[in-house]
Length: 331
Ligand SMILES: Nc1nc2c(ncn2[C@@H]2O[C@H](COP(=O)(O)OP(=O)(O)OP(=O)(O)O)[C@@H](O)[C@H]2O)c(=O)[nH]1
Image (cartoon, rainbow, N blue to C red; front, side):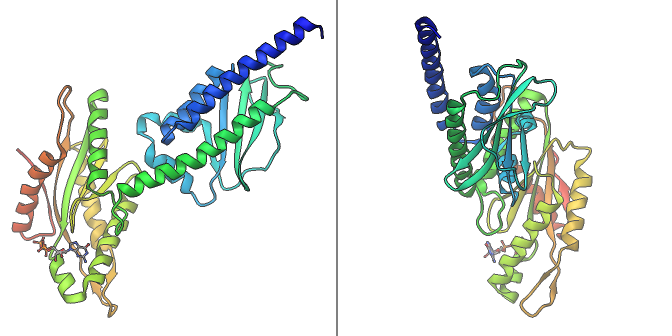
């Protein structure tokens, strides 16, 4: 190699290093899964002349999957096409890959954080010589170490944010969390002419349960109710605890036609729920509620409180009609 070639090489490397540093700072600024995954999946190919990337991540206890799915909006679900979550991931050193169609070359990089092996970052190119045996990979290994640190950091940040929006007793969203979900769904509905449904409900004679069986038993009723509902709902649905024994559901994509059927299914699940008092006797738990389908209107802001106030009037009617029933909130 002559001097000119050496100089050109050095300049290329310096430019690459600068790009890499800028990109790593971008990664380190990511606060949530959408930021991090889009910076990786859309950003990395753009920055480094790649045609695709894939992440293979170890997720033995499913916590990563839950964290990502809770945080990503339905609109961003396409990012997950590039992420594979498996219970274990093969431990490798940086190595050239026999790349899948339609790519011609690839590189697998280990994602390590301290003693933990998180998975692999895979880079793909249509160019057969983009990655080849014997090539230097130290820049890319440095990048993989930053990616690993960011994965850990974002998972922790997301967990803290989730806890701040979660009711500690039941695991349902607290009022702030539910309000956030409402605002997000309203905005999405405006963009995509999308409907969603709201259901408000309240346990019947809950004071009696506390008085007769104790506060601990009352707490058990609240947690069982939430577990029952969460297991009958879709992962994209939201359950919020708005107050002591008042809850609300937000069901994205659920239209007025489908809503009575969903309400019936929830009521059946609550009737089938088993909660025992400290003496082992089964308690009969019922709830009363009201429901309505919401069509977000373009150029209109909306307040969750206004919907809740309206639903509350019909919930009150349901209580007056003898409880253990749901009414459609009309008007
Ligand atoms: N165990 C327990 N009880 C709670 C909690 N939050 C609120 N409560 C109780 O829920 C009860 C609600 O009582 P009320 O508002 O009179 O309602 P209710 O007895 O269910 O009567 P109706 O709604 O009219 O059917 C009160 O006794 C509260 O103390 C909680 O976190 N745990």
